[in-house]
Length: 361
Ligand code: UD1
Image 1 (cartoon, rainbow, N blue to C red):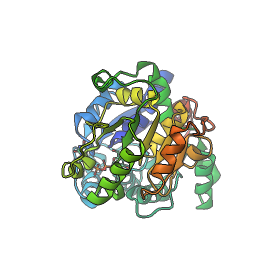
Image 2: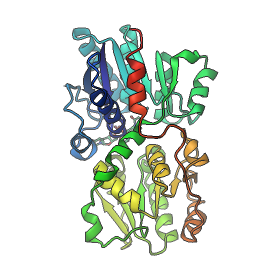
Image 3: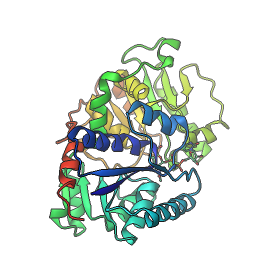
Image 4: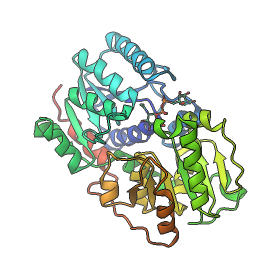
């Protein structure tokens, strides 16, 4: 059985690591995988470090698409992946998550009669202004086998008419990787540099277009956080998309610490010891849920409602209105505690691989 594992952007590497470790651990000779990196993320900080730290083998193929508009990036991935499949076909194409690489490769594979496997299928924000929601819907509309992280995601698929026997509720590969590497978390240099102490600082991450592509919005979010956090240090590892805007804004506040994107092991070292995380990421709200760290999501919705229902996440909106009351609640020590949702137990990759070996080509 030949399978392409597709990974293109930072959160993909964390998910694909779990699948690769499962193939290695189960030592299944039936599975011959080829790791295809689309090159959507290409910086050492956004890509290379993740391969090194998570013991992901070097990609067999790198499509090297790099950045571009949504369509340019998607188009380039499609053209290059199609050429690869023409010359070297595969039986299955396994995609993870919801980035442009996920959608682009699944379309190409399906049109070449290659079966598509989608990991993290069925989640929905119902917000069609997000490129990720479009990627999820398009990918799921042509997927053959669906692996889900929650019962709700499975239900979303059955509501769209997907037959139940094609849906496998297996849990969360991102949490597999978190659990596997927890013992290896690495202290980043900022810890000693500014003398951080456990539970005494906040982490901020922002990269969604609605938060970072407009200077005024980005400025007012950061200003409100600094004002409401009083003297609590705010550590902000800046995503390259955000850096472009941030370079044009000046903040004169000693509590704001702008740093480059951290490696996986360093970032999660900081998260585990933080007082809270303020973010617009979906994946981070899953990790904070499992680590029982308060999380505030700067979006109007989430495709991961279990992080709110069972976890530590609160959706505080895309405006700045709730930042102050939510930070007051945090500082008073009134934040809810979280527990891991069903099957977020570190074994999802094994379940996926054990299911895949029984699939028909
Ligand atoms: C992408 C994903 C998003 C995911 C995020 C994680 C889509 C639609 N979006 O958003 O779902 O949560 O990755 O980071 O696929 N850049 C660099 N170096 C890099 C990568 C990007 O400088 O290694 C810059 C590029 O100039 C690019 C910008 O960052 O213009 C944005 O990158 P892109 O891949 O288009 O989307 P993200 O915002 O990273």
